Image 1 (tube, rainbow, N blue to C red):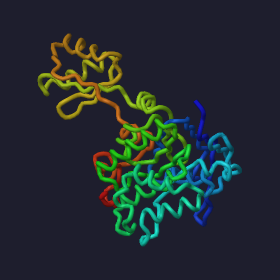
Image 2: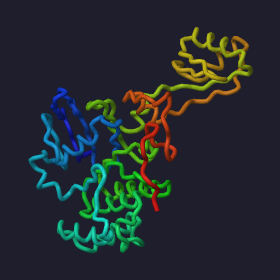
Image 3: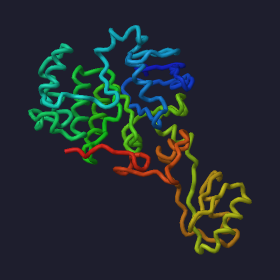
Image 4: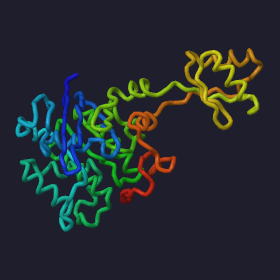
Length: 331
């Protein structure tokens, strides 16, 4: 497949009175045509710096970048018309309507006004197109931002937290939109903290931590490479758990005793667990493979420390430190 976005050895250093900080430290990334690609990393990892550098908003200190086969920033004037992007929180004139806003952007970009109605329909704002933007919720403003990025019908769409402020229904609609765009031939790069959505929607991912790539590939490959094939085991009596753990460990398994069950890794086949335990007259009441998920892999790879021993979940899958403000609901 053709690489639509390619980054090799990207570096960005900031100097201040406190010293030198490497925001990007030899970062690599590859996105192939027609994919929905998840770009993941904790706050301060270098995600936004990477996107801003790609779009010519920040000058790198080293490395190589290409968009649509052309090296940037030198070729940005040639490829900019084929790239739509939202980076960080978009700002709009509150007294303008959504239609006014998009019409002005269309005029400035030489886009046919018919496209304004098309993108308003795509993002679900058609019925609120004549309302002033200042009456919009955060989620509606995100929809407007996505519509502005789609005006040029770009070959590459880069979205930084597009689901911010959306309610569950809006998140589902955004997921469907991203998949439909990819199926139409558009390539989508999606930066998000809603890891459950990334796992559902994305074909491939890149995970960044401390300015370096720590994982990349298809979602299935990343999960397979970095998540242990654990099995949850329960026996007939909790009193037998220590003996069961000892028997399994003696046969080469790694065993963690938890409340009411064992977590077992290191055996080639789950059937080995039942065989080993039956030989000790210990009988299994549950044998459940533990499905790997992107959230656990992300936390492991990025070293994201939970706050007070746990991370808070918002809208089922949003990772956010306790006390961090979340966007308002969608209307």
